[in-house]
Length: 96
Image (cartoon, rainbow, N blue to C red; front, side, top):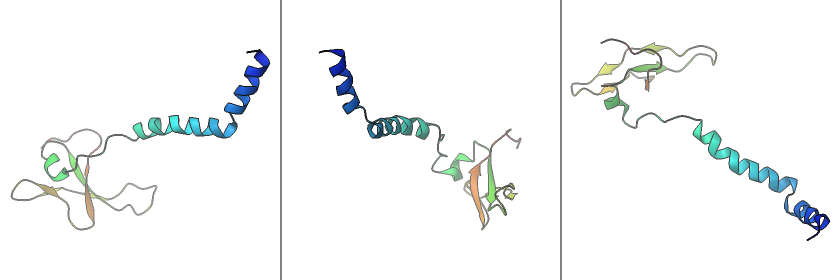
């Protein structure tokens, strides 16, 4: 197959639209992998061995959300008061 015919066939196979779709297919798994690991499904029990915090809704996107102490049930499960959600703490672990 002459070089000219090969270039012509490559031009018809590799169009800008196909190239964009191919790059998107390759980029999606990379971007999804960078999201991070999701929190454990049962944070109430996970907070027994990991530091957790109760976060409220932030007043503005540039401010840190208000926090309050985690509360505990008689059975040892963590929970938050109304208006707050239980999240894994980031940063240094605290002594208990």
